[in-house]
Image (tube, rainbow, N blue to C red):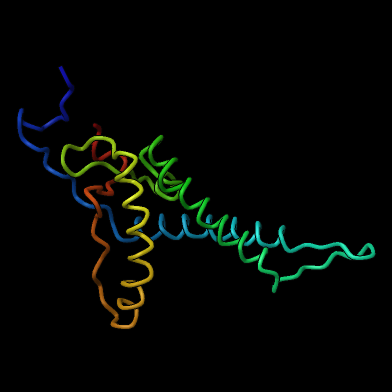
Length: 158
């Protein structure tokens, strides 16, 4: 017999916990973005170093620099948002801010494909909605995507 979440009646979906504060969500997103960005810059710098006659040169115009930087940025982001979240229910930023993710339908672990969908939705949100909200001085918050909800770590134990 499967264990039920406390407070959930048999045969009904559990009541979703209240969403975490905007400050926690934004802090987690900034930590995750900085992690990917720093790793991307480091990989790009490493790919752009060339030693000529004993002098170390950084060639930022080289396509290999930008390819390595963008590739590392996406790879670190994928590992953080999909693989680490699959294992721990949280990205590094969420772990540091006391957040986790769960399936909206039953409060369980998000599946691999849902996490990929959420990861891709994050890029869409960043490129399309963040500039609009900044330009319009909007207070609209990001909604939970693809059936995955962000909650405080202690708010739900599935």
